[in-house]
Length: 253
Picture 1 (cartoon, rainbow, N blue to C red):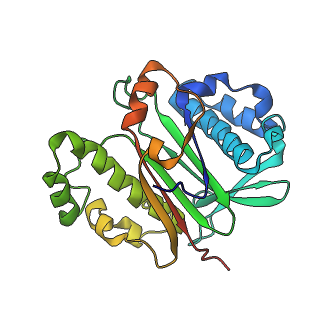
Picture 2: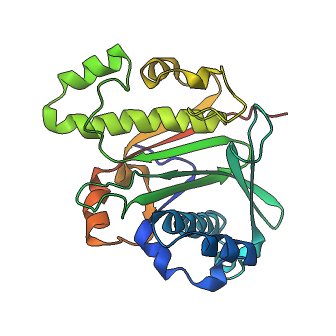
């Protein structure tokens, strides 16, 4: 399987505790301090760490790790213009990059519920719309896919179903992120297609006409760079995670 023409970085939540304070901007340090110690704070810190690792690796500019102000994060919903949600972007010294982030659910196999997890960051050329998603195995998948996909999952050996369900859901999520709308509507999107039940939505989200490429499978099959293995539980969960990467032609004016 060819690797996506993007840089993909995976960071475990636990690595956030090793983040040097110098790698955060003053505003990020203030925001991190506002979180209670726990998963929300680790997720935020892992996100900032992962983005800077991905940008530095993609551009070959390691200095951004020690000069966090050079990486400017922004985002805007293409439907309502809100900066509170929508497709994120990164810029380094004025050079824009496509950016997408995804967190695995907290209760990764073998871990304590809510205490561990993985962040996947993808970055690539600004001229493409990018969506990435990482998903832990889905044991209870009945009702979240359409009838066609459910039937396909039932035909698989039972031991493979949870991971294949995760791969299929990651594709759905990545397509939604690449489009900029996601599968969860923003607060001003009442009545939009994103309000549909997941089982209905799964069948509707076929690749967009402008899709440049779509890759899905185990993280190791996608050329993801693992920054660090993490805790014992996170390391054990890593081979079970499934991910998807979707690139679409730009739709913005």
